[in-house]
Structures are given as structure tokens and as C-alpha cells.
Length: 336
Image 1 (cartoon, rainbow, N blue to C red):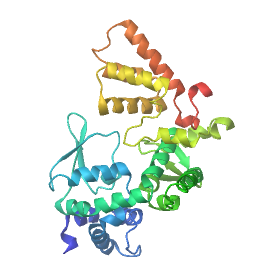
Image 2 (image 1 turned 60 degrees about the vertical axis):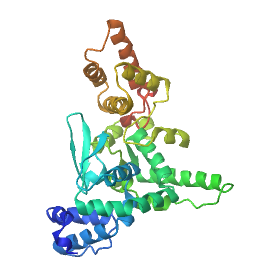
Image 3 (image 1 turned 30 degrees about the vertical axis):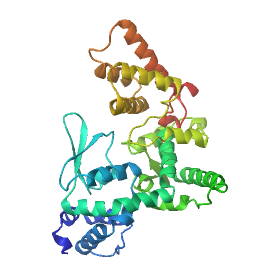
Image 4 (image 1 turned 120 degrees about the vertical axis):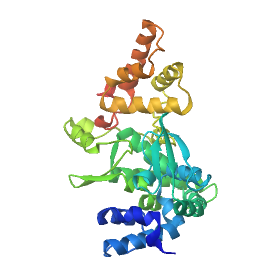
């Protein structure tokens, strides 16, 4: 096969050498970093198309779910991935194509060669991830990122080793399988892709966060008690990391349940309600006052009375005051 005539090669060669090298590094391609751009691009293309089972294990489980959807339809066909609050890593790396339709759904598709590649590797990648507990570790990583927005590398690694110890203790009396936090830390693009360095410190950031540096500098402008960060038990971290692209942290609390009831009362169900909850969470992080504007927009024509408006405003205030705030390092507004 002439890999220089593939759609993947055309996509990669159109990028800078630094961008191709990022793909090589992030997907752990067995390709030398010293190659010139043309040779590197050709070898990265060959590696990716020939070894999907090796690099797919690095993607978040949500991305792997998208891949399963893509390969369930014929090559080139459009796959409706539904409402998506932020792009997958697959999209950000431009390994698949996507667009948003008039209803806000993300429509995805692949080239024929990438379709064959993904289809040949997805089952083994999913099996590997499950056998190495990657979905479990990912839930806790997602929980940390949801609670704090940005997390120091050392804090994330300490948390993952605590999870590994917990799993080891549980399994000592079950089936004795070894846990592998180190493997997850090495492989996970949820960590490696969303990493940043600032002031000689390495952080992992939430995929939905556009300006992580803003959170860092805002925290550093506050008192020491806030900069130290609020500590959460593992179970609370797990609950905050529910699978799927939507943030649903706090959905089981009284203030979260009250918000979800109001959203459902406005006619939102399923993913539409989760998307609205996610948007409320993100809006409250950066601009709590914008919550009322957002609910007014999605509730246009559905707010039955001033009493209804007042009730929603009280629910929004309780939600905003009690949810963990990223600039407060996990504390809620009511706690500081």
C-alpha cells in the first residue's frame, strides 16, 4: 500500500512538523523524532493505519464509544453523535471529521481507510482498556477535573494510586487481578492531551475549559486557605466523574435535583436536559449572573408566572452557591 496516497497522509502533511510530531508523541507511534517532516508524516501514517489497536487504547472511553458508532455504519456515512458539549480528542486531532447540524447535534464521518482502521482495532482496544481498569481510573480523573477544573500532576497521580490501592484491596478477596494506575497515567489522552505547564508546574485541565491559565492566576490571587484546595473523599470524586461528555456533578444533591426538575419542567429531557445542566455548571464557573440569562433563553415562552420565575431564580442561586467552583479550588461560594 502506498501510504502517501491516503487521506490520512494528506491531512497530516498539510500540518506543521511540530503538529505531526505531537501526534507521533501523543499516540506513542514507533517512529523516530529525528526524521524530516515528509518521512515522519509517511511513517506516522503507516503506523496509525496498521496499528489501531495499539493507539486507540489511549483515547477516553467516550471517544471509543464514538468510534463504535462510526464503525457500525458504512464508510463515509454520517454518524449522529448527538449533543456534545465539547469535541472529542479524535476530532481535535482531526482523525475524524465532524460538523454541527441545525439541531445542535454533532455529525461525524471518516475516510474509507480510517473506517477500516478503526473497525479493525476498536474491539481489542476496548477489551484492553477494561481488562486494565482504564474506565474506572477515567471516572476518577473526570471527577477530579470536574471538581477542580485544573489539577496539579502530583495531586492527580496521588489520587490515582489511592484508587489503585483501593482496587487492590477489594480484589484481594475477589479474583486477584493486578491494577495498573501507572499504565493509565502513561496511556491516557484525558491526561496527556489536556496537560499544560505554567510556572514550572504541570497541570491537567478539564476538556471543557477554554482558558485554564485564567483559573490558575485567579486562584493565586486569593487567600492561602482557598489556594490549598478543598479535599474530597474518593467516593465524592467518583460521583463527580459520571461517564459521558456531560458534567453532571452535584446532580444527586438537593440543589442539583432541584435544578434538574426545573429543566425538565421546561420540557427538556434526556441528553437535552444533561446538556442544559452542563451549561449551567459551566456558566456558574465563569459568570454566575449569566445563569438567569441562560435559563431565560431556554425557558422563553415556558415561564408560566412571576412565581415560576422566582422559584427558578432561587434554584439557580442555590445551585451557584453550593457547587464546587474552579477558581476556589473545589470550594463552593457558600464555603468562602
